[in-house]
Length: 369
Image 1 (cartoon, rainbow, N blue to C red):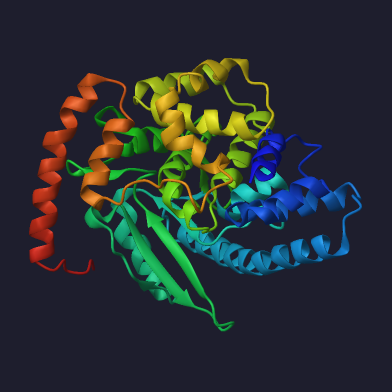
Image 2 (cartoon, rainbow, N blue to C red):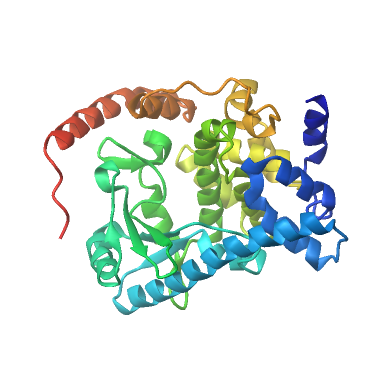
């Protein structure tokens, strides 16, 4: 076990040189929870003509091939849907997925993804839903307040294509709105991003400062979720999402000061600092402008949200307590706040939301037209 711990600590931070090496691939296979980074690592190894043991190379390429087949199918579907939405005058922004994989990595073989995420303006949610139903998708929405609509479509290969149609970038259904991590100060964040979005050929695109902020918030969400799944050996996305952020930081020409100003404007310092701290921990990068924000993470926050991914003893470590979703929402909302003005607003908003959910559960929700 001590050898595993030593190997684990020696692997990070990953550098551009180390990502495609035999040592990295062996490490990733020894930690199945982080296997989603294997396609990227083996692709880098190929580019650099790294000499790898035949079995290691073979199984790494096989995993990449399996994930790539699904990604290609999702990418083709995503392109068709975005084209149809543009034709129907529906403003749509693709989140993560194939667009991001091509922009940051230069190909789908580097960056796997398992579903399609599309953001539309709230007023166009019903119109977009009708388009998806016409395209053969079936709605399977389970979340309250319709933060996003969930769809699936069977494919001839025997698999199912999953799609989430978002009306907010990220958030909890608290107080009748979708606030990022329940932070009252984040109200209006999605609207702000829409105002600054740019029109591309077949879709809309977030401004790079806002897209980077969204990537940080998405990683922060996974850091919360994956504390439990990692301990049971389930595949996690956090390392891959951190690589997304690292590549965005090094390849996008975004305005650092504007990025920081938006974070402060919507009180998102805590989740973004966690995401940046995790990214800097695992990937070598020099970002003096943002290091001060990452360094705001406290030892307690580090133990709670960051250290799980660096624990070789995942099967035996003490996991997060299994609490109900409602209580978890309150705990996480408090953990993501660093202003008392936001904390004081959480409890009444949560109480209101609980009352709404109790009422909604008692009266089955009618499907939207």
